[in-house]
Length: 65
Image 1 (cartoon, rainbow, N blue to C red):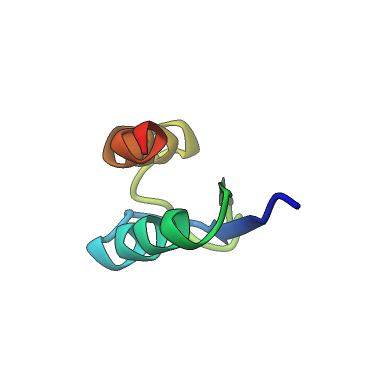
Image 2: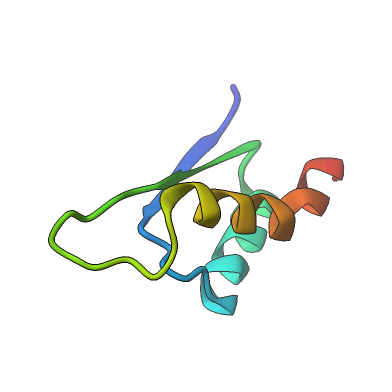
């Protein structure tokens, strides 16, 4: 059975703590899905697309494990 986990958040900006949770999660679960949310009640520093790209760059090496 494949073990999957979802890690939702606004990640505005993505922090070392967020990245640590993602890296640890990738070692425990077979699949890690990171959901980048948008909170209309907050003024974001980065657009959703920018946050997604930052996260993709930071966790690219996790896919190679």
